Image 1 (cartoon, rainbow, N blue to C red):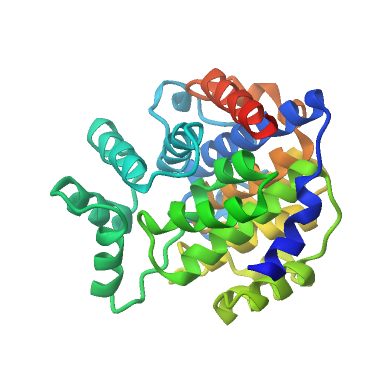
Image 2 (image 1 turned 90 degrees about the vertical axis):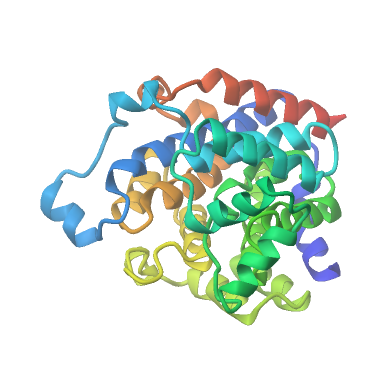
Length: 322
């Protein structure tokens, strides 16, 4: 892990409390507003979005305020609760996901659903995720793990080794493929750096991933993101829009090309594809970088319960800083 640990070292520096709280809240609130903005456009191509919404989407639907959290946010909330107790307990997180699926399950992806069905029948640890992956011919590599990983970066920003370990654990609960594990680790690393405001390059991240044996496809996607225009990421490619590597690049592009929270987030969403999850990932990265104070209030007013996210972020800040 040494190459990635070196990459993460600058992200572990202390933060002033006011700035730290703002960025921690921004990561979770950014995830939520990005998800909510993307929900109405999910599955649409960039061309179709331009044709039907020439001005683009600018607001979160009013109905979102009364709806249950979508899966991206709900699973991140459950992950945050687990991490407040310490290093991730995989079985505890799995139980929380099963309960969430029974109570709501809004937006749950097929891969996660199949894992949670097995977990409800008694599968423990990562056994269900491994079985689902094996049954897919070791092909299934959806974005259901990378979308929810922000709390890992918040909890373990100052402990790079634990950050990488729990990034992997959090992914393997439902998504066993190494591409899911390492895109999750990569995004957690990016969010940790965004929180710290440290300077780094995508080439350094790619070198770190290659140095620890991450799949070449993941490291190469990171390198390409350093020079790619948003359209070149092909987020709306119909046969891979839910692919974990593709979604990771949405977050990388957002960080590298950020002008401000609103403009950059809307650009990612208008690129189409799995817009709710691309929005969640980009929103988490941008929120960590610019802070909750940069997120339009009108968007946060359309969330079901923004105070829950603020509270979790504050608690993660406290335990991470202690």
